[in-house]
Length: 495
Ligand SMILES: Cc1cc2nc3c(=O)[nH]c(=O)nc-3n(C[C@H](O)[C@H](O)[C@H](O)COP(=O)(O)OP(=O)(O)OC[C@H]3O[C@@H](n4cnc5c(N)ncnc54)[C@H](O)[C@@H]3O)c2cc1C
Image (cartoon, rainbow, N blue to C red):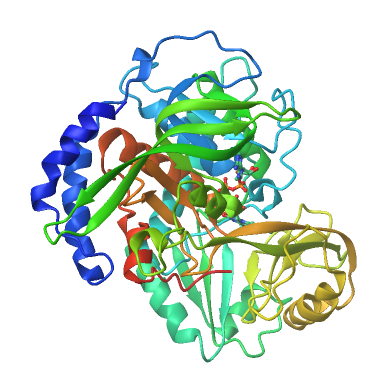
């Protein structure tokens, strides 16, 4: 643990700390740079296998761990997997994943009733505007291609995520064509294979399409399509558990932290804290278990701002760094499945209309699924996951039937709703350490594309923890610091 050594290092930091968080947020960058130096020194003291080995009961988590991951969705399990894969020697890092949405025995993954992972539509694309997002999805596409090499567990069947290699087809109107063209330039520079199509070319390639109002389109030629989210989640989970990750059923309800005061050269006081214990409410009981830990990862998806609050984040005075909240909220999104026997066949892509409505094939029996993100005024209540069927009739169907006229006649077969882990600040993820809670990492806020980015994000967080820096993809643009500085990481292609 960092205990006395941390205190020693922190005392050593004081002379060069220059920070006035309330008055001059610009100086924040200098301050974080200096604090990074401290982290570099502090890294390497994960106690790992030096923890006193304790008998572990099946129902209780271990009493101590190096890394506790809050949230066992695809992101949490990916972080756990990469930590074990990249640990310097087997057993060096003790990792616990705490998940509340599991069946009580913890033996099966039968529940996951609300996790976004299992309620997503499974898409992966490289058609983004930010190089970081393109790189993450390229990494994930390669991971999915080699998934059995990464995630195979001896004695279990090969992992098959049922990848459908149908590209995304983005349609642009007069207003959005120039942006689409700019995005494609960036995508190509990052190594994505994307083609541009004129309306005439579109009509030739997709004769079932009404191209009215379409000025330009872009089509992913490889590494795009959709896959089975359950299989990816279960494969990451099984592999991580086989590598020694401990899974704990229960809800993280609070943290116990140590706070260290620092005084700047100008006499201002700043409080840094470290989470020492993660407190877990055990399912169907009044019992709590406390896990003493070195580091915590907030991978709680749509609920991650609640977890951040437990660490005091966003609870300080409004104009201070500790007053900056993690702006991630659950936003409800509907998915509808319909049957249209005369609809387009195998070559039907993941179609993103000029209106934002999307749809894709679901199998080959004339079934399709789709939806649209509601406008701010239309945002539904998030108390439950009920589906609004009129939303399909009024907002989704007319748009899709206009674009794909054979959808004028269809039969809705089923539907579901899930929560986006939506970043209300800039719709981009928040990844990396918090500047004041200095052992809390974030991997959240993916706003509709976290499934496909999970393999890359898991690797990135593992690098930050084990190596103190990003090695594969630089995700600094998504750090918490941008929220403090008010600088948006704007991705233009959010669906
Ligand atoms: C309708 C829909 C369609 C989507 N389509 C796509 C798509 O095509 N492609 C794509 O890439 N992404 C898509 N997404 C987004 C994607 O599903 C999410 O970004 C991704 O699954 C986030 O993964 P996660 O592990 O962070 O969150 P989750 O899967 O929600 O996991 C977080 C877990 O944390 C647990 N948890 C929360 N708080 C606590 C606590 N206090 N204690 C213990 N456990 C806790 C929850 O129970 C939950 O299981 C879609 C999402 C939706 C809703």
